[in-house]
Length: 130
Image 1 (cartoon, rainbow, N blue to C red):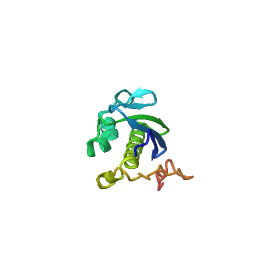
Image 2 (image 1 turned 180 degrees about the vertical axis):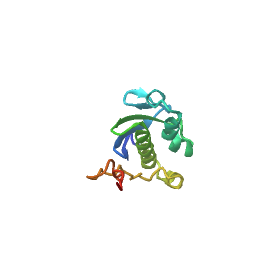
Image 3 (image 1 turned 60 degrees about the horizontal axis):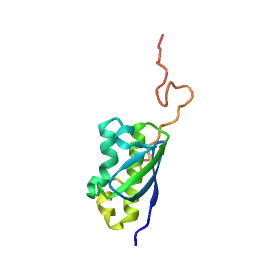
Image 4 (image 1 turned 45 degrees about the horizontal axis):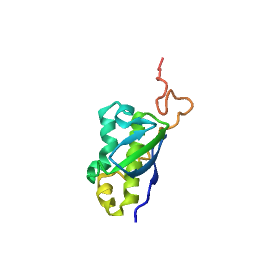
């Protein structure tokens, strides 16, 4: 029993990726652009394809992704989580392979807030003895 489309969400820092997956030829479209055009860095391109490469399904699904917030690196991490969750929704038997690689773990690290009396979150003014 296959669904016509699957919708999942991936997050990383302040980036949020809404992933829509359907069967197709392996095209990934991010914010209306091809993935290779949206992500200029080769590492970001590699990151978003990792779940697909792990389970050898690089040309079975089409993805339409809407991503917002954060920087490009955080967006790539959010897209990776969204794609991995979509693949699990479609075929739960792939969960173990993706879980072992760490693609189903939400990276919860956030930027620490700035404290008063500090230049940054922890950097204090230089101490002067005289």
